[in-house]
Image 1 (cartoon, rainbow, N blue to C red):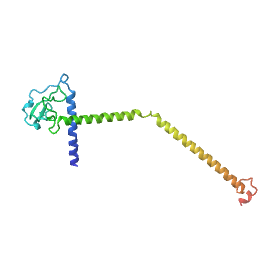
Image 2: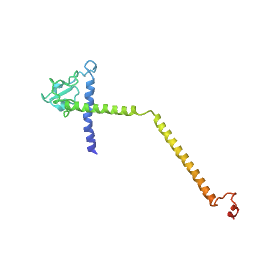
Image 3: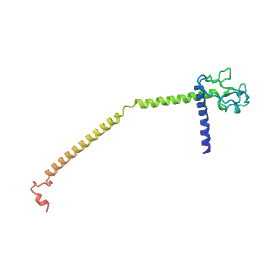
Image 4: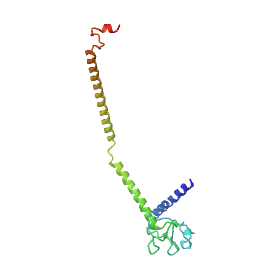
Length: 182
């Protein structure tokens, strides 16, 4: 049971990072009105990836082994700052290339799912179709019941003819009917 929880936690980490990157990418430099606390530590003071990446404003670059401010004005850090395969943000084990791939796959999956749901919902006939099917079914059932009733009446008439022919009729017109009840 604990391995399942570990798998879930491991599987949700990239999703959390993707959501965090998406949030940062949506905030542009001109529209971001957040104020940083006055006593914040500059990113350049962090000397390892594990101490740099937990801070959302910092970016660790493995090629230069330094922690720099994340360039908020850019969606992705420019190659002059750090190559994407060497840049780490949020967690040390996920580089920007993998993050871009994960975001593209998740975004494509979400868009494909939405398109399929829209096609399934919109392409269906209006709700009157089940009523038509139900009416057709009821009509056929009535026709079958009427044919069965007609066959029953015809069968009874044929049996009555046979009974009459062989003198097995139980009606009062029959000359021997008074002897049958004795």
